[in-house]
Length: 98
Image (tube, rainbow, N blue to C red):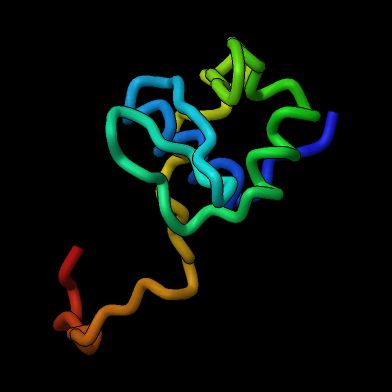
């Protein structure tokens, strides 16, 4: 099973946040809950249809499948362990300190 790319996952999250169902406008963009989901290429929606994350629900209407709803869960924040820095210098302790 191909992994969902970051733009595809963002599109699924945005569609889920706007009701999980939308209609294609004449420019190939999805309109959901009266909001045009800008920033997503029509090819992104087509690929999500072919991978089974979206399904056709009528003329020019698409909606999330169970697979799409599962993929629409926002991933946990990625933390770079090498990016954590402390500006404090280590303080030496006196002899005999435990």
